[in-house]
Image (cartoon, rainbow, N blue to C red; front, side, top):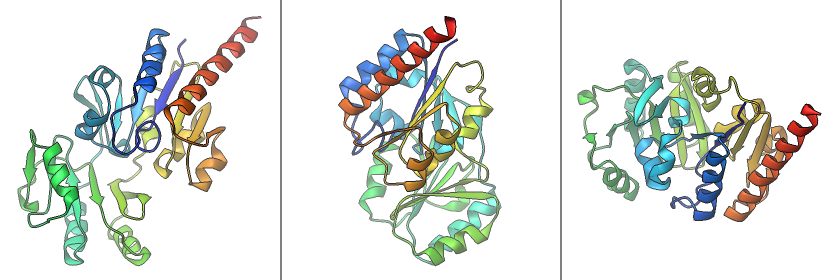
Amino acid sequence: MRNMFVFDLDGTIIIDNKMLDSILYETLKSLEKREEKIVFATSRSLRGVKKVLPKHLLNHPLILCNGAFAVLDNEVIAQASIPKEVYEKICYYLEKNNIPFYLDMGNEIFIPKDSKLDFFKILKEEAKNERVYYELSNIRGKVYKIGVITRISSDILKKIEDISEKIKIYQHTDKTIDIVPENCSKWKMLQELGLTADVKKTIVFGNDANDMEMIQNADIGVAVCSSNKKLCEVADMRVFDNSPESLVKKIEDIYEQIGRASCRERV
């Protein structure tokens, strides 16, 4: 029976939006050779994952937009979306209060027509091979995530939450907020896909609130360079910096620890 290694991306194995470091890549390939399961679970959509992971690693299950949908071999294999009447109400509120946002539909996006923020220029470039909407009324696809990219007050955040019970909000930084379907999480998607069954150990590496449920439920949960106190409290282990060398050492230490435990069980 194989083990399963689940990796968050940003702030965990991906730093500053750069391509995965080569020594981490070699370590992941080593896990493949040992026939371990590898899963990537992220707030990014597929276009964002392709920007930071080598093509070879895209063959593994990808849990995207905080668990709103999952992709395997470039095909959507599970999904949950925000109801149309809900995302329209939220978007109306955000527009009314001049709060910049975008909608992610997996292989399509909505970007405000008149926005001049650099973020949207980058997002548009990433989505150059996809359909880009500039009018909400034209959207036809399922909306997996609403991304808010500015600092907002706790009062406004509460008002967004009060618009509907059919959403869940993840706050990554004071300027980055994701709004996803209710009951949506990386861990729930892992379960829905059946990935947590028939594995010896589930090992999770993460750094943010959207990794909390995975780290709580994993056999070994590792908090990576995290300032989230609750996450650090529930984690079984910590990595105090997210340098590639520190992560590689922790992965290898855990693999060795699991191996020793397996030997004792056989004895």
